[in-house]
Amino acid sequence: MKPRVLVIDDEAAIRESLRMILEYEGYGFMGAASGQEGLALLERERPDLVLLDIKMPGMDGMEVLRTLRELDDGPPVVMISGHGTTSTAVEAVKSGAVDFLDKPLGSERVIVTLQNALKQQGLRRENRALRLAMESKYEIVGRSPALRAVLEAVARAAPTGATVLLLGESGVGKELVARTIHRNSPRAGQRFVQVNCAAIPEELIESELFGHEKGSFTGATEKQIGKFEQADRGTIFLDEVADMSARTQAKVLRVLEEQEVERIGSARTIEVDVRVVAATNRNLEEMIQRGEFREDLYFRLSVIPIVVPPLRERREDIPLLVQHFAQRTGEEHNLKPKQFDSRAMDALQRHGWRGNIRELRNTVERVMIMTPGDLVRIGDLPQEVRGEAAVGAAAVEPGPPGAAASSAGPAASLAAGTLREFKDASERAFLVQKLRENHWNISKTAEVIDTPRSNLYKKLEQYGISQDADG
Image (cartoon, rainbow, N blue to C red):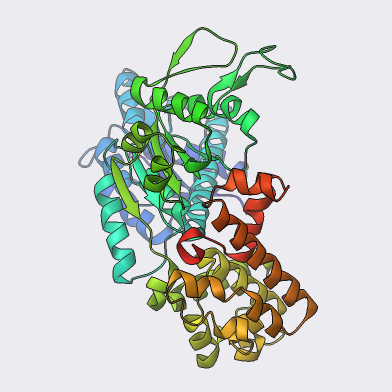
């Protein structure tokens, strides 16, 4: 179906001429002889595009344009200008019109202008839909007092340019908070660049952050723009910032102090305007005492510290989170909506959620896919969430850190119902023990147990291991 076009012009001959041009090309036509009539018709019929004359008696085209711009999703407007009114038409374009046509109106010019205007409108709507979908993906869900305190801190910090340090266990949603800060800042229209400092090998992280010149080291076959340059005028999110080497920490400190970077292999400095949001699940003050983290960098990063609470401290948010993740899973996997009965929801609220929101999201996704009916019952939940095994029962209330860690110890392993559960519980207990022995230093622990650091991080996420819960 061709788009419908509303023509607002006080000259009947112009309206008739445009009607013939549009209908010949298959467009729907509506005509109005005044601004007031056009606005009334627009409210009733919701046309896809408006052709609007600038010079009209009574309510002129500029006044109509201003009224249309106040609509949330108003149609694109193409102005029609008579001889000697081109400057006014240019002013109209600056005021929100997408283009303008000069009289007399040629049919080819009219159709090309309409096609371009409608194409731009389609792209704007598509971008708006994508932006809304992205915002939904990174939406912070909940109404608990603990979460409200975080959102209040975000609301105060976001409009400023201050560096923010997000603290909290693995899986609590620090990335969501970082994106919310960016989205509510003056930099919202610029890039949000995320860097997981733990996932990048130590020998490559400087190149990733600061870039390199071609030939600056073996394998540097092309010039690379670093993440700080990519985030210029926007926000860079340094996740797992505690895992940077001492050398990288010194270079990041220089960027924060000087607002400039130097690519590897180059003597030239490049100015950057970047807001930094950093995050960690480790105790940086203890790391400073052990000489593992620079105190001056800590002070630079923690201008505004925000602690993101674990899920066990905001259990009243779990029903809303379950509903949110269930809806998202249904949309992503084309599944029918499912409801959770009261016993299943009670079990979800009682569970300890060592992996926090990330673990809850994965659990809801699994249940939504694997439950055959439209109602999720307690028997559809994973065994550890139902609390039927010792490992699940121990997770109902987290208790002190030692108690939380003991739930993954030998007793829990022996109580596992399947070989897979036994292996998982044993591996978790082994990892927690080694992390404690090495003071929760990820790099050192990975070296001791002879596994890549990135693989150890995957295991921490898989088993919901964190220093706060298992330290």
